[in-house]
Length: 284
Image 1 (tube, helix red, strand yellow):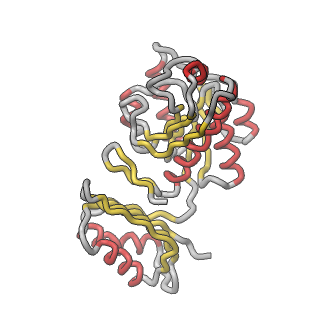
Image 2: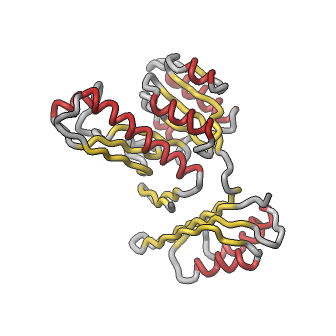
Image 3: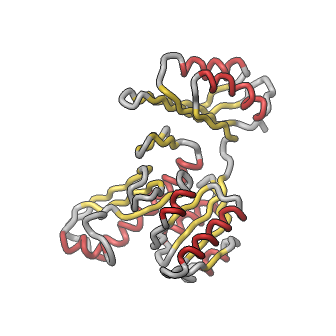
């Protein structure tokens, strides 16, 4: 079966880029299956994602990359060419709340997400049995103020050992150090509830209940040195009203967190996310 590919491009906006890319694909006998592009006039940046099949001419991925390089240099492109549907190697980190972890494990197992979860790291042992049932290595790395440097060093060892492409913080309730965040920039996704900064600390949904909130939501974003302020990828909002108990809000919040996180992981692994400063362009 032919290997389909995904080409993603980011460069300065200029007339003729779409023509150049599609012309390159035509010259190589490729058939475009899906294409999305966006020109940000304010930032003067151009973004494009093309899903294509080889067509009649049998060019290898290496040949396609080699032949695209001169065009990319001409337009000063940041670009990537990957096999379509390739499963990314993912390490998941979790604490005691397991809803996001469970959702990711299930969707990875059924093939709904293009990921291979290669390891799960936790500062607690609550989900060790679940992870091992999925036949995935589980690593218990407890953390205190004193042990945090050693724990994060061990985490980086696991990232290298398992050739991890994406780290997912699935309700991991520890703040990563600036040094670790810097090393994992662009390949770490976090999820949190939408009540920040209004309701911080323990039981945010119960605090929200006392204030009579009318929406519950969640935000998935890339991790950087600014706590919970990395480029936003996906958000979910669900309407609620006075009939919802605090426990109802917790359950709705869990659903929102799962949906936002799975969307972020899916779009990242499908090569749909391009980062521009502290913003993201999602070519869906």
